[in-house]
Image (cartoon, rainbow, N blue to C red):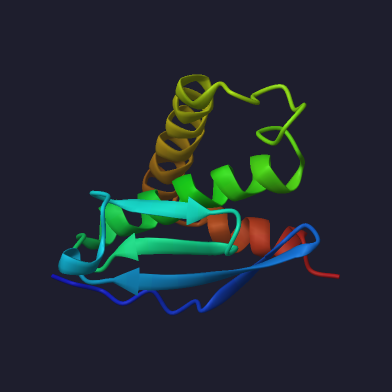
Length: 115
């Protein structure tokens, strides 16, 4: 079952990051990617819903590390792509699992962050 991501952009720190889904023939990755130069998160539109949300969360974590300068030149993860990928995989996979195991968690977090 294919599900469309109903988000066209996200505000991540100072940056506005576009989110789009890409057909399998147009991509050179299996799941998704964050392009910091273009400020775009691209997702493989063929992914099942669980893989799609996990990939979106994963790419959001990459965008957060980029926006905070952690993965940029001079940052702690500068030139350490494997380390960054391991950190993002760990956080993204566990956060997705947290949402799946605790469906009300997003509602509660949303209520707690309302201004």
